[in-house]
Image (cartoon, rainbow, N blue to C red; front, side, top):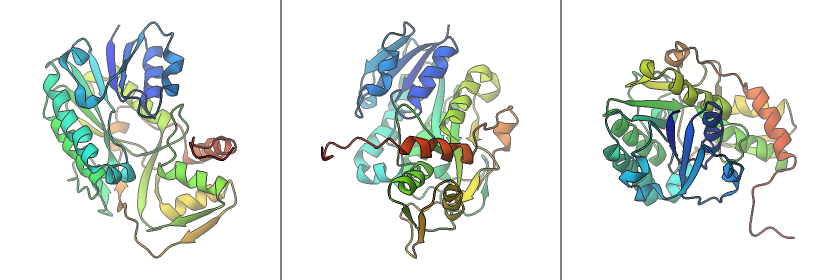
Length: 306
């Protein structure tokens, strides 16, 4: 039985990864500071092979990591808005805590780093793993610095995920497609900045499948970086908004102002495809499940009128 540690295990991907690894027969430890609450992990409370540790990644010690075969490092300040709002935390959590984690690991421990295609910036060109990343946001810069740190050790894998979408037991509404559908359902309008900029997308459940792929194809993946997504899921923001409008009517407002989160790229995913990995959930299926979710779900707000 493999012993696995998931930093940020109570997050959007972390809770689904925990569920998947328990099904794989792993012994899983969730390490999280639970800044967004405990509810996402309550379903694991009675799982005998799941251990839950409340701890901030910035306070990581050797005893937190020493008994694990694989460490999935997901803990981070994620996304452009969160990093811009918390620049100091973005540096200390995304960069410095990753450096501390790497220094605590033994040589034979496997580290799987949750990277991002955001590091490709606004090139406007096709990008693969050989392309030189040119991050333009604090989020992209800090994630790229952390990736470099992780890949300086032998037994590491970096997964550069496309922009995620879809439903999780710990929901994120700030992700681009999730946000588009939420605004379409709740506000009946959507303001688009940099309409023609292109992003690439991946359902969160397919991201989990990529993490599990490392479990089964470890030797092929160690020391390597993989873009994780699909060559068929590169969309401009305008095309994506029109795709949402196929399922629910709303107004698309094209702004002349620039997007503060400047990203524009087309990603190639041939390398991960050679491992047999291909996404199984389409953008269309993701939109359907999000429309259903937002028909009744609203993010919790302590100021809500009752």
